[in-house]
Length: 187
Image: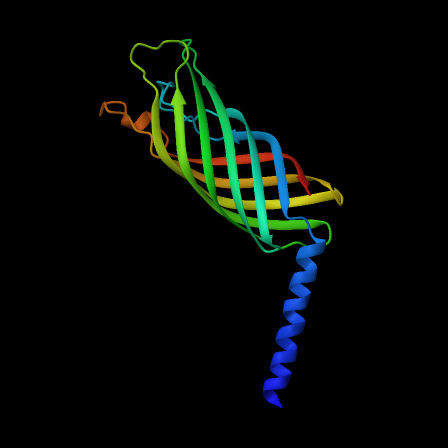
């Protein structure tokens, strides 16, 4: 009798998960504004914190409602008073856990991947660089309708960019907060 009850309970749970998956959205596209709280490109020579404005896009595939795989691409721009500029591109991938509620979906993720920094104005002392980076954080999606919402997200963002010159090592901020907001569309 106990086995039959357990089997019945397991069948109900599995049927509920399958129904939830078939009626739910399996993909999400996000795009918006992003702010990095430290300049990690090394073009600021005053060893102070400088904000970097940028953009962020993400695509998430959810094989089940609580778990997804996210691809996140973001870019930032930094400029200094001595006419130097730098561009950063981040390509991050990893798992996302989410809890879909009626109009709010909180989520957490850890994303890994490369970061590339380039210096487009031909800085003689600067050359483009690549490094490993990761973002650990989360946020929440607030839905206006079933198929459009706004996302608020905060990440601890670490990149492995460092200077080969020991004198400049402290100018590269490897740890920064990444604050992102924009529109999210599940389908």
